[in-house]
Length: 193
Image (cartoon, rainbow, N blue to C red; front, side, top):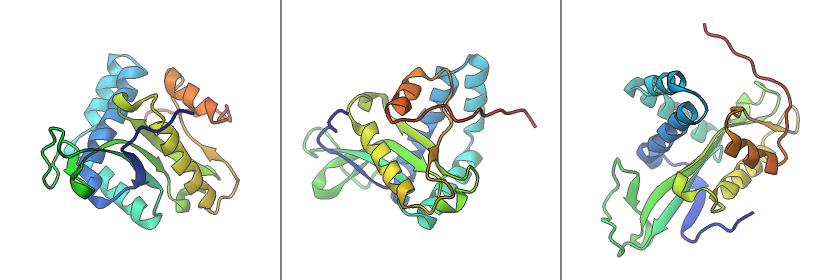
């Protein structure tokens, strides 16, 4: 595992993270569409990212984080406020004036489903893990995974395991999860409604 860069902290999601969190979620969804399928898949994932979906999704994240603190974690990068950052109260660009005058930016997140949902798969469920491309290969994903695994171990699970869905075409993600000991456990099948 690589060493996490200085100035990156993994911490629980907070309500003030919503705007920056949404930008990461958009990156996650568009990456699925673009990186693991053709134009049809990308346009399908783009089409779902409506204002209504954003509101519903962020409301759900808020409920999950409130009901099961620690199930949603973010990676926050901070830099010295004197290095060209503009400080302030934060904005839609995902930056804010953090502690001690440092500019902060969310660069990734991991989302394990709350304990009450463990009966879906009789296990903990890693719903999403996403990292900004500039931070991939830096060890931040390892920190996010460690936080998710620690949280999953704290849940009262029907079976002591964690599951996730990863697209067969997403070689980078598959390699990451395999490094953590995830292996084939079944096959997810789907159909249109």
